[in-house]
Image (cartoon, rainbow, N blue to C red; front, side, top):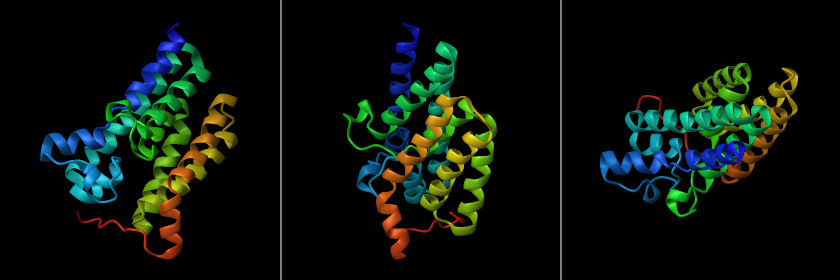
Length: 196
């Protein structure tokens, strides 16, 4: 019973659309009408800069961490992965936004990975930062980090549910970044201004 509740709790945690709530609360604006229209941290950062982008990224990371930790407590690695996956689904299709399009799950997956595979997560954070600083493409940094995660969970010999999670997370990030990949290949992807 507690395993089922942990997975449902993971979905509800993931469904909290901080990228929508924070700009609405602070600026009185709907992020879905600005930038890419996405409610993830990248679009919030792009539209409002660090003052709102960083808090949203940290909140999205925290909900993935909390969901995975809840699952680990309720039933070990497998339930931790299921709760983390539920949080990612919730982030992509949040119940609090009537299942409309949510974010691309990168920060939420990062938080979940911190709970499930801490060493891999720390390395992935470093990979994301290096790629982002060098290229200023958040999408490219996310894609490279997703590949790194899939490799690291295998190389570091994590339990099989976490390996499956890492590979599935990579696939989900690729699918959700299809348009970004097209823009990267076409040279039209948005570069972040680090001074903002």
